[in-house]
Image (tube, rainbow, N blue to C red; front, side):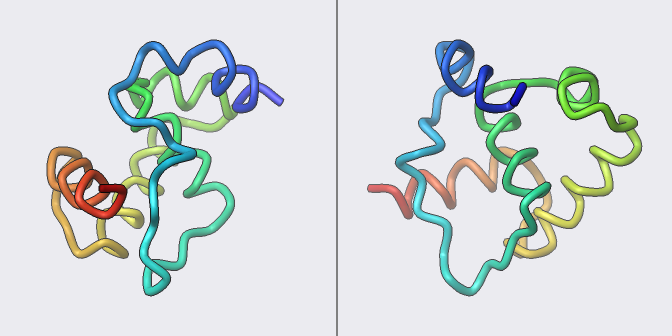
Length: 88
């Protein structure tokens, strides 16, 4: 519920529109990873993501690490670059 509210009201925070992002078929994300990816791309910090999803910051970090591994990248700027290229 909170994620959908953020999606409706918080999209001004970020630079990328999650609905327009084309995640490659070879990258299999879990539902939770997709939620975290959405919030990350909207500019939310790990702390705010943890609060929104009622999980620990450590758990957020683990999910982010898993997302990066699945994309074969090391940081958020690489993620944005890859997803920006895919959505063009």
